[in-house]
Every structure is written in structure tokens, then in C-alpha cells.
Amino acid sequence: MQTRRAGAPARSAGAPEERPATAGGAVRRWSAAVVVPVALLGLLSACTPEAEPAPSASAAPSVTAAPTETAPAPVALNPEGSAADNKAFFDQVNQALVAGNPAAGGVEFTSNLRTNGFDIAAMQVTPDITTVGVAADSIQFSVLWKNECLIGQYGHGAYTSTIAPVLGTGQCLIGQTRAIDW
Image 1 (cartoon, rainbow, N blue to C red):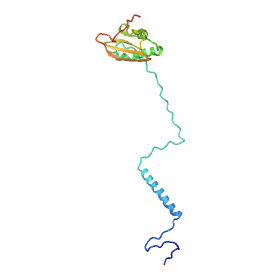
Image 2: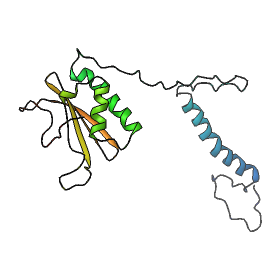
Image 3: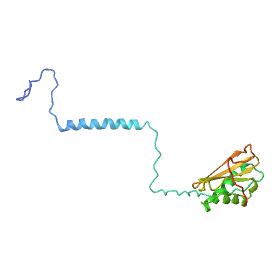
Image 4: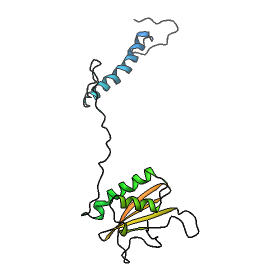
């Protein structure tokens, strides 16, 4: 027969014996709560592809030479080429002028184009001064090239260009242009 401690509740027959909580039981429950997820994590990581191994600390880092920027090769006027073939040269000539003279006007653009081989008789330029006597916001200049037009525009420090078909008038620019008499 079992003896009962004083103040302890009576246990019914067939019920498991209750044990007092001990530090060892708490440790077992805690370790099970930690070990099971860690084990699952280990199983799952075995299913993923392996990562590249990290370089060892003793390996010397490789040095790669940085590519150096090289200026584009200068282009030249191609008298046999189309307007498209000569646009890069047209732009190069005009951009060089702007870089050296940000205040360039019609005389400077047309003179610079002539100096670089373009036919001054095939050029047009808009006035630098408006009809009310103030400086134009921008100027346009063109070179008629084999039934096409190389057209440049410069104003507010920005240069742009395009190629356009010749107008029905046989010219490249619409509106008032000035005589090129220099």
C-alpha cells in the first residue's frame, strides 16, 4: 500500500504518479524546444545549393587595370559621302568652336565650317540680332550637302544638329536668313 503525504491530494487508481517539477525537467523541455528547430534547419539547408567558398585570407587580391577613356578619333570631311557620313565631322567642328568660344555667332560658325572644308556658298545662317534689336536666343546654320541639309543650332550654351531633306525652295532653313558676305 502506498502512503500519502500529508496535505497531498489523493490519487485515483490507475492515474500516473505526479512528480514534482525539477530543474532537470525544465532543461529537457528547453533543450527539446531548441534542438528540434535547429535539426530541422540543418536538414533544410542540406537541400539548398552550396555557396561559393569564401576566398582565404592568405590569397592576395587580384588587381585589374581600369580601362582608360580614350578620346574618339577625329573624323574628317568626306566629300564623296552623304550628309549622314559627314554629320559627325560637322558636329565635331561646331562643338570644338563652342568649346573655345561659348559666345560664337553666325559669322564664327560659318567661317569655321568654311575653314574645315565646307562650301560657304552652300551655307545659310539666321541673324544674330532679332528684328527688335536684341540678341537672338539661338541661331541656326546649315550646309546644303547633296540634296540633304546638315543643320546646326546653338543657343543658351547648347548645341544640337540634325539632317533634314532640302526644302521645296532648294534651301535648308525656313524664314529670314542673312547674306554670308564675309
